[in-house]
Image 1 (cartoon, rainbow, N blue to C red):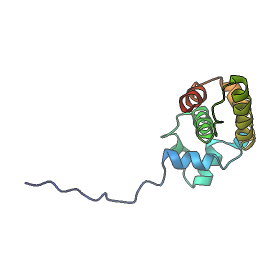
Image 2: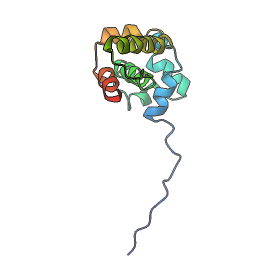
Image 3: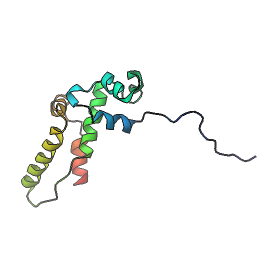
Image 4: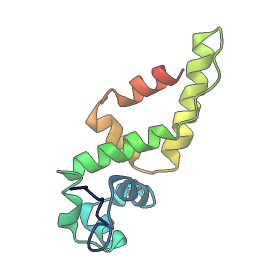
Length: 121
């Protein structure tokens, strides 16, 4: 008896974590909600809860996705110069998503930004 791979039956899933996050980045952060995001994706808001258990979890994932696009400045001998350049890059990224800085401050450090910045530097 030989096993053969089957083709999946039905249509492919229309949602993925990446698609949700990319779409969420298109919505002004201060207006981001599960309902608004679901409407933009043309799915029920309940479908989003499969990927994100709460609105806060979604917002945290969006902030983490934003940090993935954070351009890190080149290494310098002076750490203050590097931190100043990093702060400017962070400001520019946060300015693209109004309301995200307030969420980051309210949520407190999740560690992902700090870890990613230091790991990539």
